[in-house]
Amino acid sequence: MEETNTNKARILNIVFSVLLFGGLWGIVEATLGTLLHMPFVNRTMFLSSTTILVPIAYFLMGACYKKTGTFRTIFYMGLLAASIKAISCAIFKMSYNPVYYMLIEALAMGTAILVIRPKQVVSFAGLGAMIMANFIYLGATTFLRMNVLTSTNAQVLANVETYVFKFNCVAILYTFAFGAVLFGLIKLAEAKQWDFSKVKKVIFHPAFAGSMAAIALVVTLVLH
Image (cartoon, rainbow, N blue to C red):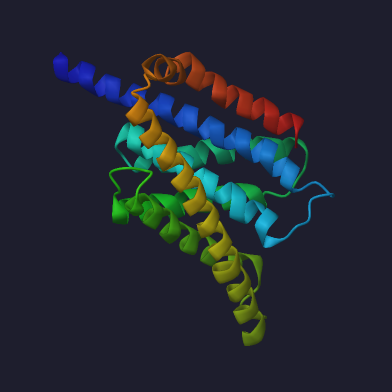
């Protein structure tokens, strides 16, 4: 009986963690992603969804991994976030490219976590996992974006240089900067002995986790 209850608790932890972090990923994609694609935003590598949204997704996937202790939840997160986006694409007859990219992000981060297995998200091992995931993601999406069979060697090299190296460098800088700020805040909270137990209780409550997934779907449909 005790073993059954433990397995049930573990499954529920996985389900609600995926709903929470997958929902937050969907909300970020819908809100910040919409803003970054506005006409008045200068689409440089410093204000690109590739360099801003992808690292945020990696942090959320890493947090889900830490909460559940299994890298498989990252793939589940990808399926949830991609499914929410797919519903919007189907309803409004849009391209499914964002869905494919989200799935590749999850596969890339899941692979990196499986290889590196960082104990903490905000750590050098965690940063290493995100860097590895970004190389995999940008490498895969670069070749998906272009037809390698019909492209010249110069075109392939130009695309690899732009996305796998230039965009990747900016994404890594953003990831390192965000991680450094987060690390500082964690150490400050530890030094001040701030108690976040009540906040965590609310955030990780099943109702809150479910609401994040529901909000992600609504926001995605509204801001399609």
